[in-house]
Image 1 (tube, rainbow, N blue to C red):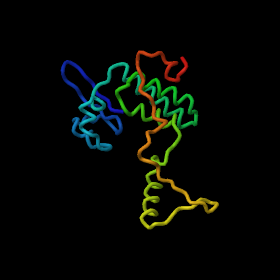
Image 2 (cartoon, one colour):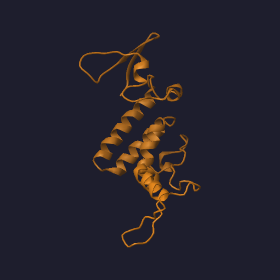
Image 3 (cartoon, one colour):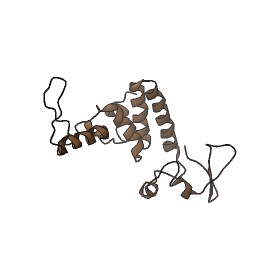
Image 4 (tube, rainbow, N blue to C red):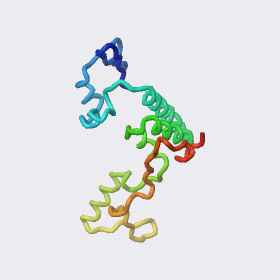
Length: 164
């Protein structure tokens, strides 16, 4: 969690993952703990103080992670859907929700995709347990039938599959 104190035109980044109080400039967080694209910062996804609705979305997503970690996927999906509702511009919450509401696809497993490409290059055909040829390569021309639809904030929650 990125923490920042804002006041009278000044701000201080507060690093809470170590002993004592450290405060690093924004440039530090562009590469730590992992790189962040400047375009994501410019779109307002990172390195900013959050308005109340987006701060609430962070807590809803954290709640969703706890439910997901405890295999309570229905409650996790509700928490993620509400996070999307409160911070619809942030792609992370939609990604969490999408991972729960659509079945996995072959594209979700890059190691299997790479193995299939290697087999195809060797002109070998993979076979299933019964000796039948298997083509695990996903067609690139078809749209994802399980893609999560855009959510309008003007719709009541029940219209996006979440019961109040």
